[in-house]
Length: 299
Image 1 (cartoon, one colour):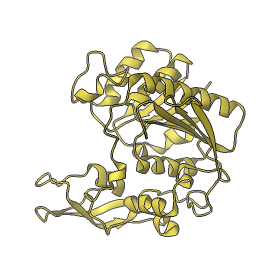
Image 2 (spheres, rainbow, N blue to C red; image 1 turned 180 degrees about the vertical axis):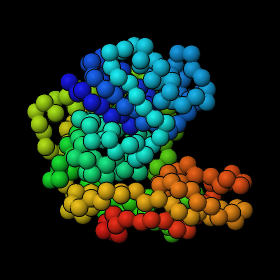
Image 3 (cartoon, rainbow, N blue to C red; image 1 turned 135 degrees about the horizontal axis):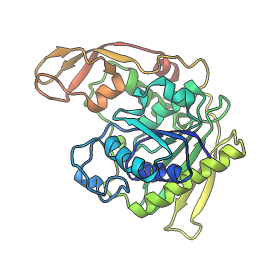
Image 4 (cartoon, one colour; image 1 turned 135 degrees about the vertical axis):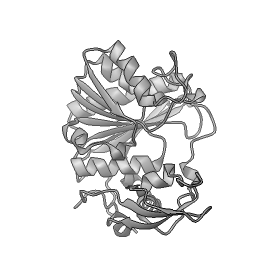
């Protein structure tokens, strides 16, 4: 059983994972999710479906429910992306459950895993239908594969540049990062989240140092398959990972009204959530930043 747990994302999957670690009696759980409750969330999440408050932070509503259900667990969280969580949470955690829905967020988690030597159990829903799910064990060891190792060199460099480069406009988003059109079924979320926690417990107990994924497809007779992952020699998230992983945008320009301002936030955050304080436009371009080395070493 895990005593100190981090959970990235508290949507359909993250809600089920939080419920499961609560049932196991974990001592302390910290949840990170920057989003607010929207009408489409209500029917998908076990933590957000009862007396939902539209516009309230997901974390706040989830914590209220979890503290009622599992009073012996110390539940905490913040309405931020996982990359903005205080480093102390990573230092004391035993496991990070990834319940996010983009490759960029998973790559950021891979960098944090490398920085803190923290095992990650990631999961995702969909891909080809609503009856498909995947769980990946990524042990956080230098010689083991991380999520970024599973990507092509080109895809990995593109994602790393999304959090480093000041060349591209923030609004030039990659279509592949958008969520699937279909609706996540709460039943599949429950199945995959249960498998996610069970696989993490088993892999941790067996001290598995090799990365692997378990893919579940209820549309086919074979149902599941296990895929072993090898570390990519081109992945920069293993050796000499810098402490300042995520560069900060120190100057941005609004392409709609020309306003120049200082976001003071990670470039990745500005690209996904930034808006001009003058006109509200999201058509922003990074002009200056404090930059790292990951994107250049991967290209």
